[in-house]
Length: 168
Image 1 (cartoon, rainbow, N blue to C red):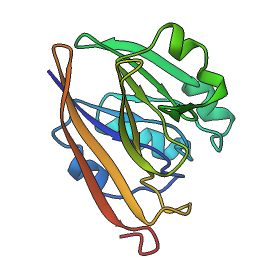
Image 2: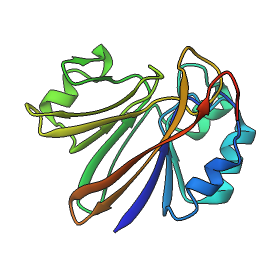
Image 3: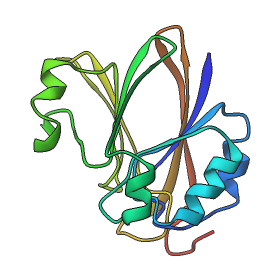
Image 4: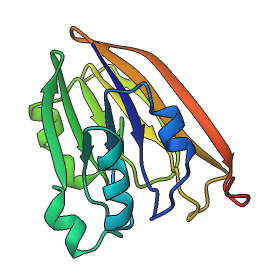
């Protein structure tokens, strides 16, 4: 069993509550637009950290993290990318691979819109954790926690940090 802390679109913004809410997690996953090497270093100091780069991430982050991460953990095939779309409207870049070899869990960021959807056609759970940083049009900053246990994805929690404009 692994407990995952998931976020995206931090845009170089650190909130001390990341450490608080992810304290009991085994790993932290970031779905792109990290925003700075310093922020990535802070996450890496907290927990094992898996990340992909996003469209705003510079050269150093693109060297450090891939555009796509595909791996198996606790019997679940996971695919993380920044610009991936969602069921019924996947990004051109992930088609046709998502249809040829669908993961059990597909995670993307970019839209700043929190979404948890099940794709019945692909038998795939899609999670977009929304945006945890201040930059963007989103109203609430969000994080997601969940458990992967012997092939099951369960105990998903959405955490609202605050109104984006307030930063706190």
